[in-house]
Amino acid sequence: MLASELPSMANLRPDFIWGVSTSSFQIEGAAKEDGRGPSIWDTYCQNGEVKNHDTGDVACDHYHRYREDVALMKLLGVQAYRFSVAWPRVLPQGRGSANEPGLAFYDRLIDELLAAGIEPWLCLYHWDLPQALEDLGGWMNRESAAWFADYTTLVATRFGDRVKRFATFNEPSIFTLFGRSIGKRDRSSEDNLHRTIHHVNLAHGAAVDVLRQGVPDASIGCIHSYQPCRPFGTGDADAAAAVRLSTYWNNAFPDPQCRGEYPSSLRTAIAPHIQPGDMARICRPVDWFGLNHYSPVYVKAQATSMLGLKIGDNPAGIRLTPIDWPIDPEAFSEALRIVDERYGLPIYVLENGYGSYDKPDPAGAVIDTDRIGFLRAYIAALNAAASDGVDVRGYFIWSLLDNFEWDSGYSIRFGLTYVDYSSLRRIPKSSFNWYKDLIKTARRR
Image: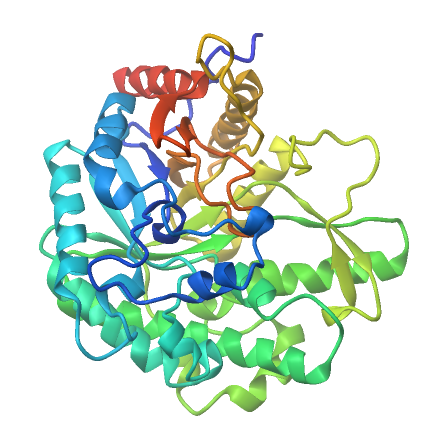
């Protein structure tokens, strides 16, 4: 069967939702306009930490071009769009006085989406913490849960009349693990990681309560990165390291949020940061589980590294994307089945996608056949999981647009739409049209 053909969707629900995802810092730009305050990622970029010294100052200029981008979504035929609000755009100091021009931008975006028949899915936090709060200790400060609750109150009050789908966090395991750095092993660093994990979980619970109280009929979840962690080698040390990473990566957030307890291997380490009543504050009822999945992670034991492990190497002989991420649709089915069994919540896949180094051909078209093949295989794996009874209700591709890809800057492209960063012109790729056909076919069923 050709990669361009559509996968079977026979086992997906009739009301299955097809969408696309983005995040504020990665696409908005306008970093110093209309009262927006700096985020930790602005600081990181200014310090020259990103490849090619790229910054998010302009990004895709979505702040000014959002109407064009919503028109692309309407052409694509998606039913929903997952985006994030930039905390420093609406609260430049992270707390205190709100910034009306920043709030007005999201008013315009939400209204444009609704006019196009696209449901807004609002994520409160996609990694762009206000720098002013980082200066106060950021997520290592227990007060961060109260800061986040106040920010959530602002967002719920302003947008809750039109937005009903809310995610508290995107991939808390990633920004805590890598924000605290899997670097040199140091007990104080590991303690800071455990402190941060607990405070982010407290912030999640506080936000859920705010949304329940402030938004009638709110549908609430958290978005977790779930990637099977596999030993690089055959020895016991690598096997133990893979289990250890999986505990932090896959379970340190959904377990307390959905089951009311930390994984057993983490309880002693996190216990010094837990106060009476905390676990009840964290484990608040949610409506769905947001799942981001790209590939399995291979793990080596390395005693000198934080948590005693190292990631980033892949065994010989496995298929890889151009950015060296394993291609393994079966791992996607595995992740869906585990999440379904462990947490018992409806699942929405809110990120899945293929990173590469796309370029227009001489005619100006972007022919990304390999991305189409990847998406086809992964959607087929999703359908297979659904055939086994997994309650999966939606699939969102990362991403609508090529964008700022964190440490990689603009060198890597995940979009269904090519962005020429010199002109900011949008060019739908072959995968855009393929996904458009898939959605049209799916919605006819």
